[in-house]
Length: 403
Image 1 (spheres, one colour):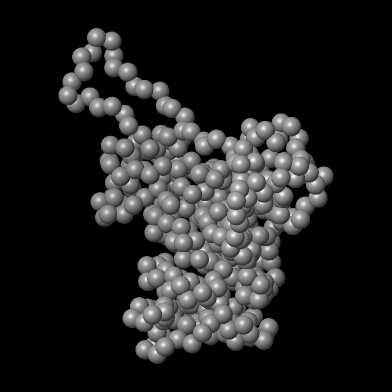
Image 2: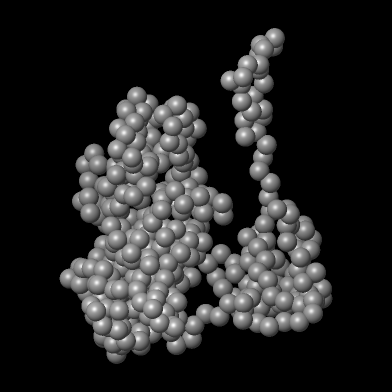
């Protein structure tokens, strides 16, 4: 395999470890400065120039895109994608993870537990936003912050309002999050490769610091995640479209809460805490994908008539749960289950005797009409109560309908 590691820091621990792991396994690996690429759109085929010369062919890339060059870095990754070069983290996945607001929107839509979060721009909306997440103390986060920079704990409402007003006056976008007091100064980092957690550590802040980032002096220790935390970490990474990710979680009283999904997770802390060869695991995964890439049968399989391929997610209220439906029952309805995703397990060609469970994902081939009947109705937003005017209070031109 010929591998390019996109990084502006060839001497950084993570970059050196990835290159060494690739070379030890007999692969060809080079570290390429992301900013030295030029995107060539002049020819008939997509191409890239590197340091003024045409780039040779690569089988795969490992993007290590710094936050300060996200825009250009994503453009380079997109060009590699256009050139059919494999990347475990796609440009869309990296872009989603870099935008804190966007990533939280995606995770919350897919039922991943996160700290209560609000986003407001108008000064008049800040106090209601603080109240919606449960009131002070609250955590204020810059959307563009990294490594704990731009994360502030506001102990009371007045301080929170002042901090938010100051940041907004400098044209900074901020998120307001509930402070999970029981996890103060501690969080979990799960390192996800493909569809499994290969390592996990607990990070603990020093002294009165509530941010546990290693870059802020936090200490690390090996930790064994329970099944729920592993499931949450893998789902969060896959939902974001990342095959190599660091998933940061808080240990709350209600279970693990995802704070962030990192598309360029550092290796020094996790390898130091666990003693595992994480860099080697990443290289092995990429090499396997290059040798036998994932094929999306929904796009590649040519079908005719009324048959096709679909992925079905089993959610609450599904008829198959109430009837204790087996995969054999689906086969009788002209639906064959190719792969069953259950928790963090992937089961190819599952047996017909398996009973369908909550949160299962089924990759099926069969009669489209029969599969359509298994898809739940679209979730509708709960209507909020309409604010009514006080009795006998005449409406004025300033009264507005809530939309």
